[in-house]
Length: 426
Image 1: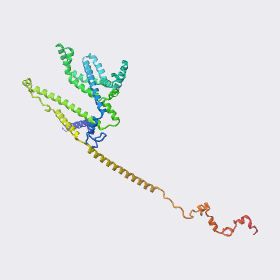
Image 2 (image 1 turned 180 degrees about the horizontal axis):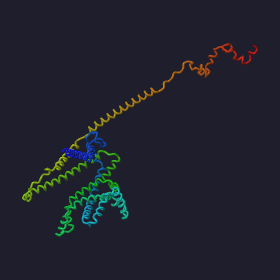
Image 3 (image 1 turned 60 degrees about the vertical axis):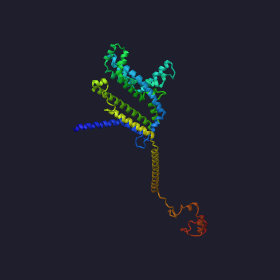
Image 4 (image 1 turned 90 degrees about the vertical axis):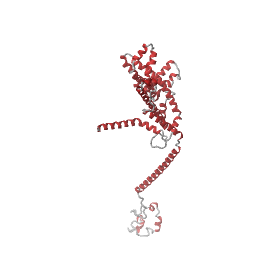
């Protein structure tokens, strides 16, 4: 019992981590579409705003990219579904020994990188255009044409896989019975096979449109003068993004959720109606008065769809009357005050560092020595400034002459008269 509870808890933890990893980036990006900063961020939260949706609908490049993506997607759906259906029919009717080879050839475009497909499409149709002798402005060089052809090259393989899965459950006896009853092959295809294939055709069309809408690798070489949404977004990201792109992502997520819930609600309603028909009596079926369950009865997808629709209406109504101007002004004032405080703190810190450095330099600098006031050099004043510059003449004039006084201590032996011979007569 404990091991079962542990396994169950581990399973729930794994599912929580898996969905957090899968849906976490979408939730964060959706939150950034309602935050007021000019750069997309979820934290710190500043002000609730809807201005990025307005900025999105005023961006002509984004709107032009959406229009081109829709045109390319529509063309890709028509061409890819047609080629996929033809390939699926051929696969079920070809000689069995060739099916493996044929299947490999049809699936090969999926394995080829989109960059290679884009370059090859551009080069191939450029050669064809030159061989035919058309100008550079012909439809063979048109960006929409090249993009549809390039995307259909590999999207048709996806469509074929979806259609083959449905076609394998088809009973060929129905077509044979229609032919036996006098129907032509075209009538048997249109009235017997095609209705059976409608669900798969719808699924293949949705898959083809989504694959075309989000394609970038192939489109980047073929779009020409018709950039799609992915091309415009890539060019915008190079120069800095704004929360307007988050608003676009939020709209795409909401539309996808709406479509998924609507499809699930429709499927559940059909199942409930089929169950009601099965439980109804013959009289009720003939009269058509059997109880048909309501759209919301026992249909959680329909309930969630209605709740989400009501929440969307409330949000749109709030956006038309709500103005974040005052909140944004308060946030800007708060930022200004915080900036001034940071500047003051920085100035104070720099002043403290300058004072500390000055004090350290004063402590480490050598102290200056005082000049000598007397003859304390130890050399008897020989190297004093007065002796070197002749400033002692005045003092010598005051002192008695050397010839008149015998104060040399050597008995006038070194007197000038003695050296010159004047005293020889004595």
